[in-house]
Image 1: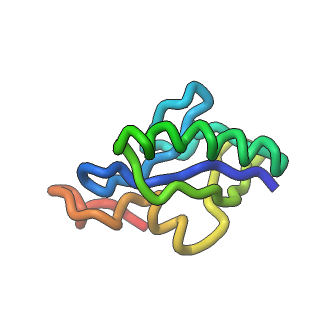
Image 2: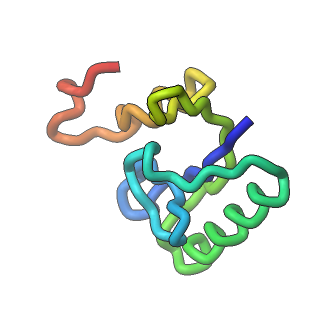
Length: 98
């Protein structure tokens, strides 16, 4: 099952996903995907650089489903909530559908 690496931005708690270039994105569709344990560990190691630089916290891998159209969906309800970005209060918090 494919996985992506997620974290929270340290300054405001926004949910981020690690990209293949080692950067971070708020869009799970742009996240780097790992298929094997070794690939997951490599992504986590890449993410640790951002932890050491105090850019993100709470880094971990999570399983995702890649649909036929290429869209990426988290498996767990917790991660679906996080992916909807409703875990931090922003001015448009009430306008984001779940």
